[in-house]
Image 1 (cartoon, rainbow, N blue to C red):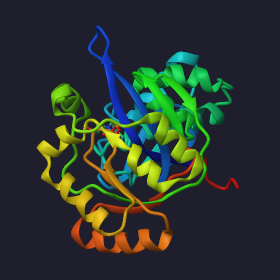
Image 2: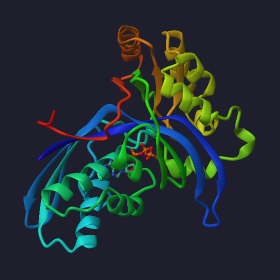
Image 3: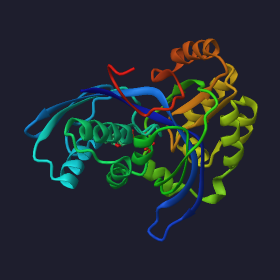
Image 4: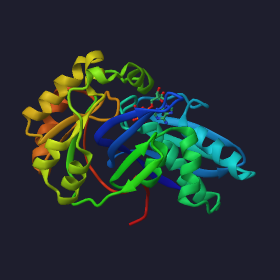
Length: 290
Ligand code: ATP
């Protein structure tokens, strides 16, 4: 069984509070993008993992795909295993939810391969124990996510947007950026309702006005490349350019594929980790399916 586990972007990211246990309360609009990791799953006696692609991640219990398989096996008592191979394309420590995407791909894939018939909400509950973005990566769609990542509302999407994604520097630790975040650094907050309406109507100008990511200033202080890449994407015609998640990747959104391609070619000359993709609705896609 082969499938693609897709990355996500944050059209918006707001932090609206903090729980007693320290977790931040979010309010954000997220959507899958066509940049993806390739996952292969085959039935086997044990759960095993091999890795490929770039960067090459250690194939052990630190890898979220492996942890997802073990969590599913523990939850269901399934007696067998699977040989898992993950070929990495999504940049790591990028705020694109690459680890969460792999976990979601393995949960959905093994649910089918092992004929477990768990519902999406059961998979989401297992996914939340692996990471706050895993429930979103299981569900996909244009989604307004609140709480720590577990409250999701699917929203109408008027169109998909061509995107150029750049990771202009080393990855950032999500934990480090959340710990460093404080209200004082925020220079702009998103208008989530206005952004949702703009995405439903396919209105680039209104979307640009409503977007913001409150974590961007914290990450920009640590990596100067973030502001540089945003400026470059704006200069190349993006109607909006912003950091995704806690960084370190940024994306530019374009009204036409031709404009995105031209910006991609220019950005590729400056940054090795540059990707051309588009926003989409499905987060996990099986190969050989229409
Ligand atoms: P998010 O947007 O969900 O905060 P991110 O994109 O910033 O995530 P990831 O790339 O998903 O971050 O993961 C960051 C850390 O998780 C890295 O230290 C990496 O080694 C570890 N990790 C474990 N499994 C994976 C995986 N399958 N893919 C990517 N990173 C993984």
